[in-house]
Length: 69
Image 1 (cartoon, rainbow, N blue to C red):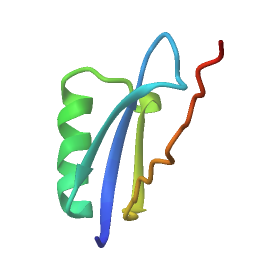
Image 2: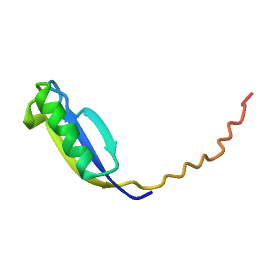
Image 3: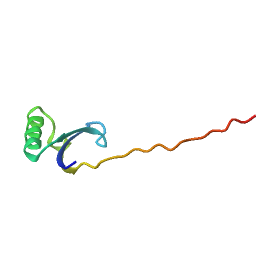
Image 4: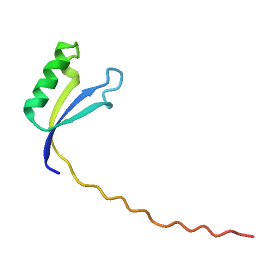
């Protein structure tokens, strides 16, 4: 999985939420940030991160329910 760059645009009403775009490098992230600013997104709502994607494994445990009388 390697290192990638993430650009996040925070919601106006709830800055705990937003839209995240994963990109392959800083150059692409800079270009996206420029486009967002030019389209009217406030600079304060834009965040750029270096990100290392981690692999994820999901395991399910069996659940047993016994029927009573």
